[in-house]
Image (cartoon, rainbow, N blue to C red):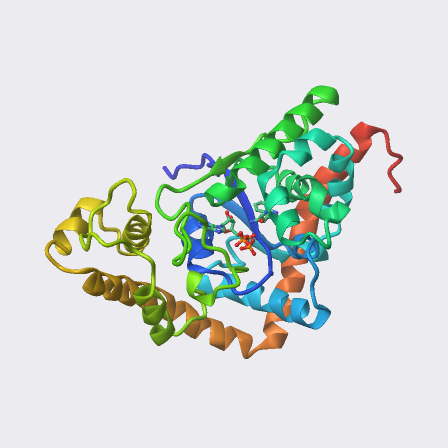
Length: 337
Ligand code: ATP
Ligand code: LTN
C-alpha cells in the first residue's frame, strides 16, 4: 500500500538586498545554500528592496538592481515552482508588520547591532531612522512566513537572535503566534573574507574592486583578482593561525571543490602561491560560468521576469497576510471586512 502519511516539511526563509552585484561571499555564504535547501524545505526567498533604501539609492539604478537580483536568484537555480520567490516591496505586509514589531523593539537592542554601527560609520551623513530600525523590518520579513530556519552568513546571526527575541516576546505577551526561527549557517563559506584585507568580510560595497569577486566577473577578472590576493611570505599552502589570507583562499577553494583542508595541503605541497591562486581562480570561474550564462538569457526576457515577480508577490502575500491579520487581531486592531 502506498504511504499516505503527508510529511510536513520544515520551512526556511531568507532575503538579499539589491544593493549591487552579489559577491562570491554572498554566493558561498548564502545563495548557494538556498538552492540546495529547496527540496528538503518549504522555502521563501526575497529581494529585500525596502532594506536597500536605508542607504541612499539612485532611483533608476535601484530599479535595475531589483530586476537583476531577481534574475540572478533564478539563474543560480531557485525554482518558482518549488519556492516562494518575490520582491519584498511588492508584498505590503512586510512594511506593516515591520511597524508593529518596531513598536515592540527597544532602543537599547537596536543600538547594539553591529551592522548599524558599521553602516552608520560608513554613511555618517545619513544615519536615518530606517537604518536604525532595520532589524524590526528584517524580523517581519522572517516571522510573516513562520520559518524554522533562516539560511544566512555569519554576519546576520545577531539580527536573527533579535528576531527570536521578538518572536518569543510577542508569543509571551499575547499568545503563541510566531514560530521561533533559528539561523542556519553552513560551515563552509559562512564568512568569506576580503581578498585585500582578510581581517574584513568580503563586501560588495567595498571601494576596492580587487577586494571582492562579483558574480558577474569574467574569467580573466577572477583570475587577476585572485593573483593579487593578499597572502604572506611563508610560501606554503597550509591552514594555520596567523595565515588569514591563505586560510581564506583555502576556505574558498574548499567550498567550491568540496576538498578538505588536508587534501588541499597535499595537492599544493611544495608548490608556490602562484599555482594555488590560479587553481582557486579557475575553480571559482568554472562554478560561476553556467550561472552567468543563464543570467544573460533571463535578462533578455523582461516580460517573463515581471510575470514571475507578480506571481511570486501574489503567492507570498497570501501567506504573509494570514500571519499579519492574526497579529493585528491579537494586538487589538479592528480588522476591515
Ligand atoms: P553589503 O556588502 O552591501 O553591506 P552584504 O553583502 O553584507 O551587503 P546582503 O547582500 O544583504 O549584505 O547579504 C546577503 C547574504 O549574504 C546574507 O545572508 C549575508 O549573511 C551573506 N553574506 C554577505 N557577505 C558575506 C561574506 N563575506 N561571507 C559569507 N556570507 C556573506
Ligand atoms: N539583513 C540582511 C538581508 C535581509 C534578510 C532578511 C536576511 C533582509 N531581510 C530576512 C534573512 C532574512 C543583510 O543585510 N544581509
